[in-house]
Image (cartoon, rainbow, N blue to C red; front, top):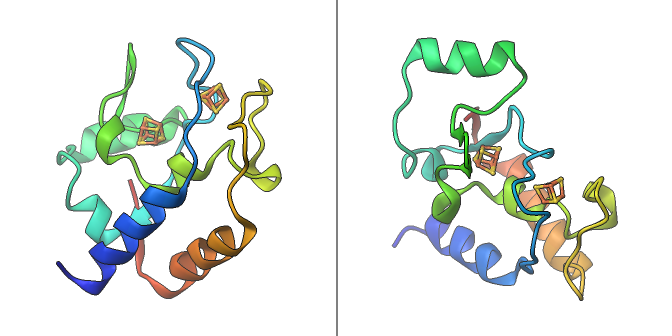
Length: 117
Ligand code: SF4
Ligand code: SF4
């Protein structure tokens, strides 16, 4: 396991989970992710990327929601777990993310090459 994948696993384990409004995907849109996480996602064609971007959507958003839920990027996991990325529908975990972990995640974002999903 590379140091980057260790970090990703470390962060994934520390981002609290919570139940979304059923069927909601209001916070999905164009997101960026590390190349390491990108490599775990199914490859989408240029046309699929362009179509998603034109709708300010994500190429992995299907009729039934996120199609890559188990491998969704850190930013998707972070959404709703911090007051800085609050869910517009008021959903949240019982305990929000530890601010120190959130800060480490932002540091990871700034230090690691990210690409558009
Ligand atoms: S975090 Fe909020 S906006 Fe995002 S999918 Fe869940 S309920 Fe919807
Ligand atoms: S990867 Fe999944 S959760 Fe993240 S923006 Fe795309 S569809 Fe939404």
